[in-house]
Image (cartoon, rainbow, N blue to C red; front, side, top):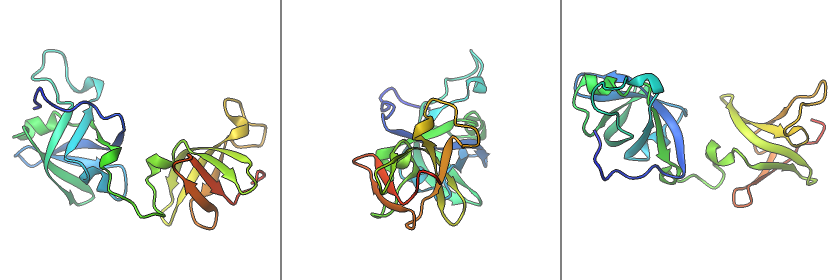
Length: 196
C-alpha cells in the first residue's frame, strides 16, 4: 500500500479525522473529519496514519500503511469519502478502519487575518488588558454561534484549585472579549478580569 520512498512523518502533524470504514466495493474509504469545516482534510494529498494497536494481529496480511496518497476526496452526507492509491477493494479499505488521520499543519488553507485554527491557539498564554496572566489555552469548545476558550488558570497550574474555584476559565472567543491574538508572541490579550 505504500512505497519505500514515502515521506517522513511531518513534525507539524495535526490530527484531522479518522477512517470509519469502507465505502462501496472499489477501495474507497469513509472518513469522519473532526472539524465542522473539513478543509484541513482536503488540504493535503498525503494523509499520515496511526493505527489502533488491535487493528491487525501479527502475521495477518500485509503491514498497514503509515501514509496514504489521496487520489480524490469529497463530502458525502455528514462525512467524507476518499479514493486512495493502492487500495483497490473493500477488504483493503476495511483494513484501514479506526486509523487516525494526520496532515501537515503547513498544508492547511490560509485563513483571513481575523480567523485562526484551533490548533494554533492551544498553548497560547492569555493575559488581560492590565497584563495579568489568566492562564494558557487548554482547548476550545464549539457552541455553534461561536467558540469558547478553555483557559487553564495560571494560579492553579500543577496545583488543585481553591475550594469553590474552577481549574479553568471559559472565555468566549468573540471580538467583545478578545482584543488581539499575537501568534508570533504566543499570546492572546482579552478583556477579562481575574475574578471572572
